[in-house]
Image (spheres, rainbow, N blue to C red):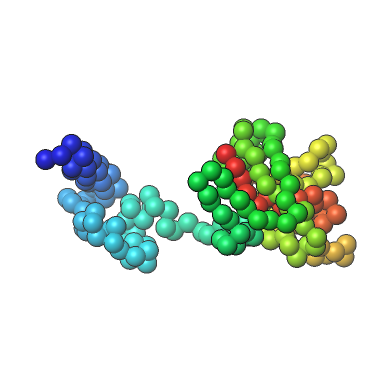
Length: 186
């Protein structure tokens, strides 16, 4: 038997034991898993959710969908070559970040980004990460758009750092928004 095969069999065996231990902890009245691990792998999301099992909890299949950044770069605009990557984007700007921990783990120390300058509020979507000038702090803040609305003063966005407990103070108007993050490079 090859070393790789022995390794994979050992890992599968250990994972089987661990899954039984975890299952026994959550369901002490059951003696064994109701379905094999293989069945969980091939089962669809709906089946796993109906099971209400610890696998469902571990895989977070019951979590509410969160808004992701808007997809701005079509696949045909990205060229990966042997010695370079070319992303064909108009109006692109390079950015680096201060390590404030407000956007951990998405943006952290050493991360850089490619951003674009929006021309209208319609280019900004819930889930986008944007740079904006705050009325409540010096400098540029880079946080996620969690809500978009309109009031008597016009378009606004509510912002929040992913790692912050509370939303940013005030409504952010389009005139305050500097750029939209379209790529993060680690």
